[in-house]
Image (cartoon, rainbow, N blue to C red; front, top):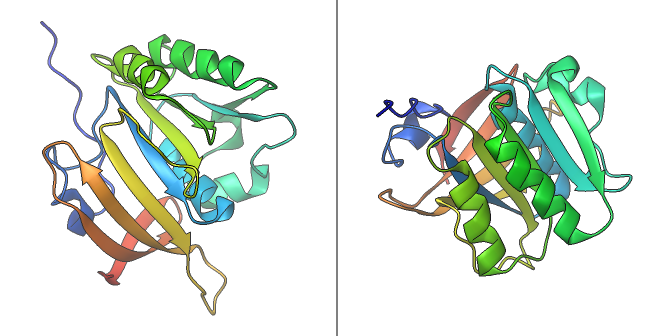
Length: 194
């Protein structure tokens, strides 16, 4: 039996709240977005820390801005983009991506999801080295089988750098917490506990 891959570190103050000392691989993680800009940026920062190609899945016409990816640590040539029209197609794309050994992870922006679909996604990721991210509008967030659930909201910043209130709402074997964080050059810096 293979040794599970090490967790993906986020920032020391945050990692202490996570059971593996970072974001678990072989797992689905949910990001509730108070605003879409913060959710997309956090997901891109996480995907940028993976050392393999990643897949971004979003409704038609909704794709990340390539120049912004580099600032968050994700080279545009490592990100594959996929669009969907029907939610079922987006779910299928994420499930297949979580089984694809050539990918390091994938993110899906989809607001509505039932527990059965989220369980299928978690099972697809389990036992792999991939990270699955499910981005949901905070107002629409309901039941989910994700290993962790986060909430992210933008905060003002005089220097116009990404700055958020990041809250770990729940994590299997972890401890909830909240932080004010800043993203810079692919790193996440904790400014203070929230």
